[in-house]
Image (cartoon, rainbow, N blue to C red; front, side, top):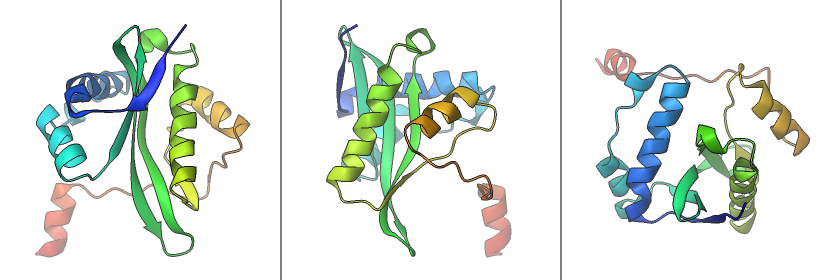
Amino acid sequence: MEYKIREARREDMPAAFELIKELAAYENAPEEVEIQVEDLEQEGFDDKNFKCFVAEVNGKIEGMALVYFRFSTWKGRTLHLEDLIVRESMRGTGLGGALYKRVVKYGYDNNVKRVEWVVSEANKNAQEFYKNTGADIKKDWYTVHMDETGIQKNID
């Protein structure tokens, strides 16, 4: 299979949005997606809040990885991988691994001290893949989220 990994363009955002919705459905949370294509276009290309890479097979976008820079008070500049998504029909083809390598290379090219992301406890295949690449899964740290309701409660 021949594929091409490249930086996303504004016109790729409808396909990226489709992948985001596919992931949400896979995670049994389709109603959790609150953004729209226009948000991806604004935040990624006008405001430059993230970088997106896409994987093309025969001219069709079959995968994506969305990343952004963070700052660690211990390490300095880091790169956060928000999502790496491959269409279900393309899983197991090496496309995800190619996107993953592109993200790591982007971090390296930008002199980050760490690339970080979250993986579901249920996703044993991904955990094994990440371990085999030398990643360290931190089991003694918790991901903490505060939604809009919680934010509102804390500013009153």
